[in-house]
Length: 166
Image (cartoon, rainbow, N blue to C red; front, side, top):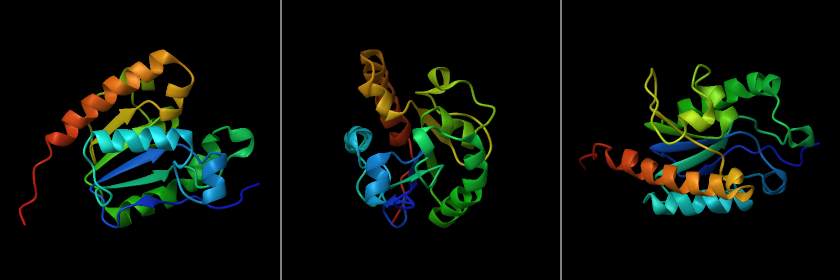
């Protein structure tokens, strides 16, 4: 049973939005996405790529912690209109998916996450850059190494953004 719906953390008009899979226990307690251990890893990556607090936002595909912390594709279909509405309201220029399920939700035909992560995806709509889930870095050194490499590629992808003139 959920404690809080977990909807958004970030700036009011972000140009990039990170899309995660589902809230964990810490997120459910706080009512905010990515505030636990994986969130600390994501926050360090956001700082590393040079994003300020107003530049980014963080959402999840699922808005409530799933039973047994298992992602449910049926719940993703139910929550999809909420995700779409969030993205319509926020109007980010770019998206970064965090993990397999977030990638599948936004780009159902994409390659598996370990093949897709670290490179921008071609296609319609907003540009998407997939990353493995930051929580994976807590489970295996090879994922921590992959995360660091892919965050470096993300920094390059973000650096090619055309600068807005004041």
